Length: 313
Length: 284
Image (cartoon, rainbow over all chains, first blue to last red; front, side):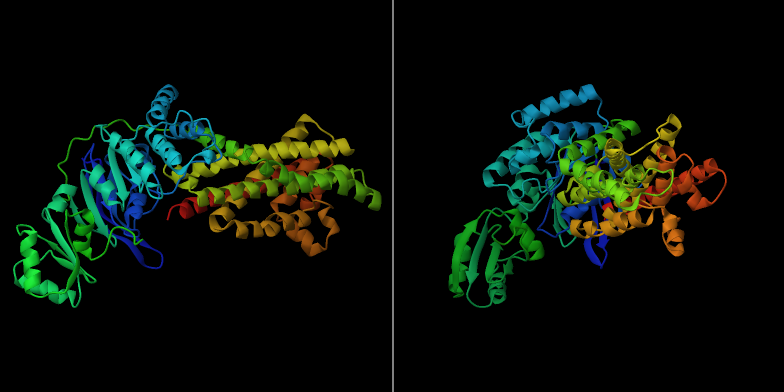
């Protein structure tokens, strides 16, 4: 039995919008699993179905063996979720928010008190905890939400875009906090994100989601290894597809090279960059902005889907 | 594509079950704390009805001579004002549901391991307490202003039963509307139809028999009419004239039980409907 199992999960909203088109994955206990994709890919809808706040159109899902449709109360009792939007009660203090959560999740009072004290300390909330949440900053609110989700000692924790909207410094602090959760052997984490560094830093395995379907699923390292250790990127003046075909004929570009607009990305694999540049020159391709770099998950996504994970600036 | 991870035996911990009383108490506590942080929700529903009891009823008594019967008109209107304070209070409470939905708090509650009906019932508990306090203040103000009330233990039981069941009904209406209507502006727009119109038709300011026959007939189908008649039977008119205007029987006790049953039926029906509507609309 896995901590999270999803089989053929599908969600079609009224009006025929197919947000999730049949997703399958399993997550082992203690694993940190990422759902990576741009806004609108179906990540939050998938989390919604797993946390019973969205009714699946088809398919099944289980949390620690509890079917989310047949035993929703049991499924909810073993899990906790930090939603993308802040959902703490701003009219209450941080401490009251934590206490309410532990009571709703049935944590015995003595244990709840110990647990909330530990988490307040661990997440740096001591000075804030008795203030109204309305006075918290975005990052403080997010830390409170994580504390709240953890104080019921869930076996499965869902983090839906946990750092979205936060400034870079607070994002990195929060990633440190989340990374620290990995040390807990019995906590399974499913995190959705469109930030590549989050996925690479936090996740044991990542499912890349595009338009409601999983297009790749593996460890970040394995996904990146598909593109080799180095990629060559440049802009071409003229037909990018012709340029790509030319490089393929010369044996420089393989099937995984791709063009997005005028930008061409070539995983070099066993070729050296100099070799590729020599081929470009000899074919008299008019190019600019030539660079080599280490591939990232965005390149994996682009290669699979032709789109970008990151939002356009 | 390694879609399947190596299955690792999951450390099964017995899932915790939240006790019913604990879950309801927690949800009610949350709602009470949020309400207390917004005093307007407690005071605003009282303003109109208090004016009715303190100003309008005495003025009308002077202007018209009252009901020209054994029934004290100021007490009559004091009870009638309950028919306004409870709907307004419940409508405000329903507004909180929409606020919860818009600010995301409802999602956290939906992810909690408690039946969805508890989210409605927890809010109802607070609406009941708040309405009870407001009704007590209103009757108190009316009495201080000179309204003549006949308070007995038997009367308190009838009054409490009628007021409680009517509040349950009205909260069911408010919660149902809050599930159907997505915006606060639209929701507030429903107040005249839900709270004001029945107030004028149900005998709050005058006996229902003072209206044209067809309106009197309509009034008999309103739960507020029965609730007000019961409350007046309890505190204002032990002869139960209001009940007799509805049922036309010779036994006032039977008439009282019948009216209580009507209000109870509406209360159960709207609570059931509101729970179903909430459960369906809260989860997409």
